[in-house]
Length: 211
Image (cartoon, rainbow, N blue to C red; front, side, top):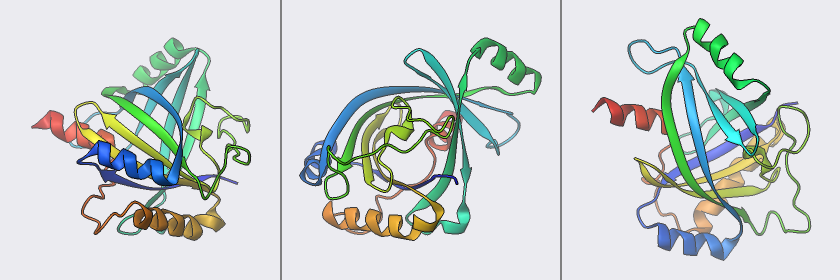
């Protein structure tokens, strides 16, 4: 059974004020810099399919997402995320090149991760199993607590500050996950939804590059 990412992303104007609000409802987990390279078959317009490769400690990991629009609404998106550990990155890139995939976009994200206190305490929190092997893999996105609310406050180079509010859930729990995210909206005093922008970072970077 797959895990689904239930998520809302918001553009942040004042990261110091938002950090203060986040700390009032969530406990800090860690800081990290995520350096991603995206590959796609590049033709005219925005590519229909793309995936990223990220170095995690001594491993290279490929990640791709399947958007599940059946569960989308105006403010929250839902997607399945898959990860594959690459034993031989260079051979894999040669294979991609033969399939006409090319390096497309590079993204650097400076992130602070938090877990909402009323959903997960340090003593009880559990990590969702990696989609690659069924095991915990703390270096990837899957370190996040299952069914708990995870928050990332991030500066994306070239784009600015964003906040991602996310719940990892089974399909049967998606509606409940959305309720948890909306509760965080209220607790963080997010008034109105003009801050929400669920456009993918790659699309933002692609549009900026085309200007």
